[in-house]
Length: 106
Length: 229
Image 1 (tube, rainbow over the protein chains, first blue to last red):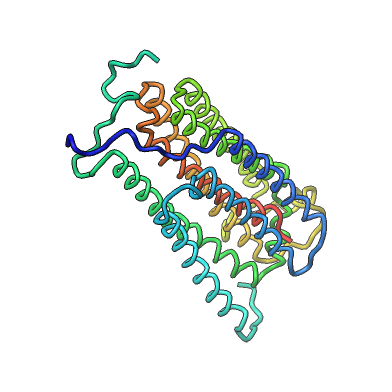
Image 2 (image 1 turned 120 degrees about the vertical axis):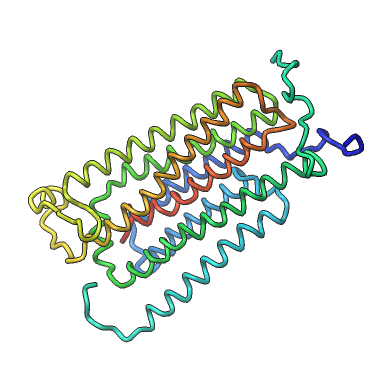
């Protein structure tokens, strides 16, 4: 295998400072997650909680999991998983909310 | 590090013959981990969608059920897990810049955080089991103890449903934390042996991806189980 290049591949190294900044942002957003429950946004409570969680998830994916500097393939793989999860969620909710209500506890 | 006479330490690592190059091997291994993480998302996703459906059908059950969870425990565990994600990422970072000693420290702290997380989980679980707050049909809540916990609230008939979700979601997540700790222990030992460096750290990266996913799931579980309105 003498003709194959090896060892010289440069992987992008995220600077230490960036990791610390991302961590600080995640802690701040955790505080916000708890703080928003002191206020009532009515029907938007769940949307706000999920929105903040998704920002945190995006930070972890992009920096801790290196997706920002990774090849497109890995983004497509994980995006496919999330997409089909949303499909499952969407049609399940569509079914549930459009049913004629019946009184039952279980 | 005077590890120059170790076969593949910090020097060129010889990739398996069915890969074109070490880089090809690294990328393929990582891609395999991402495909696995995709199946993990779909597995936890099923539980999340089930949660959405039952929360829609019985909002009171979830609202009252979440009164039994302590936000202080949940928030602490969130911070512990986020911090462990940072140290995990730093473990890879220190492998990349060839600082073996710091990589070992970072990975050790990550495992320690896993123990703290599971310790807090143990406190929460034992308290709930003590009150009889068990999943589904096993629910055997002690009325007096519950009244002293959340006051005289009328509990929904199907309150066990909340605890089914609570124990199933945090339980499967907890098993992932334990498996993650074992995997980090494995790469920690290999790091101590000096097997990883800038040219080869694929197992550390793969285990790291798994650990971050476990963190990701918790990021959603925390508001879902502790902060329900």
